Length: 370
Image 1 (cartoon, rainbow, N blue to C red):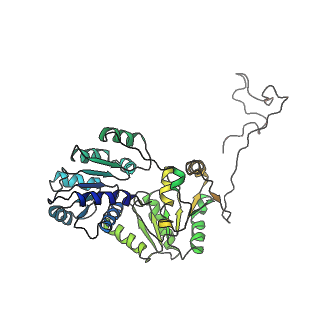
Image 2 (image 1 turned 120 degrees about the vertical axis):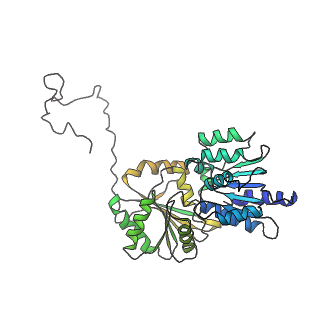
Image 3 (image 1 turned 180 degrees about the horizontal axis):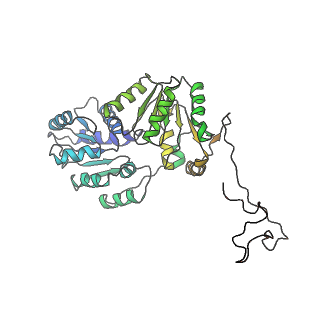
């Protein structure tokens, strides 16, 4: 969507016009994940080519020494993940007391990850008179409270949900029994082997387990999630971007910073816990105006989620037939007859204390839930 450019270019323009000679950090951009922080830093460096502006990044999972060097030299724009920034502030290595513009990117994700105390601590270390930009996919109560506490008369800009899901993304839905999910996935991958494919799972364990299963069929994959070391995450992402591996398996948190221009296919192997994340997932494909495809595997346990997702995106996802198709059993309401004034019961319904514990003769009466 060009979100980074939307706030990055005006910030760069302001810094150039109101240039200061000191080494103090004037802009702070906070993001939830390492991948997203690196991506924002890289974008800012691209946008600021030909200027003498300095941009640095601090994030967890790597040694602090190189980050200390960057901060000591001074940066105009600092991109950071919350945890590492708090550590560096407490060590008196990072100084954000002169920050004039604060950008909180993916604020809802940071709050979901439990960074609320870190965010409040970071905000408290910046200038009181500053501009604050808060980006969030959802405006829940926590986000509202955060904006109410730290923003003054904010202007709210909303993007319609049905505008977020790109028209150039072909969406398909496959109903499948949970025991056949891997078989269906293998069939899908075999027919789309030329495309780079990003597969989303709900858990880290699920990502690792799926990678192991695919390796049994000689399918090489990259895996990225929160338990991976930063060096492993960087390597996995680079291998995927350069085409060394055609398949990447990722969890939602780790996938927030993934931006692959030629990503042809996204597969929701597991449906996300939060419906809004579906939009983020499928938005990884069809970047920069290109076409893409998003496939979702739906088990019986996911039926309600799919209905909610379709309501959210205001779009009915095309249902595909396949040899592993799960038969959906719908319970139809009983038709009422006009002559029925009272509900009729079988004659052997227990209706007094003497036969309460007796089993009915008519076995069809007690169906029970299966």
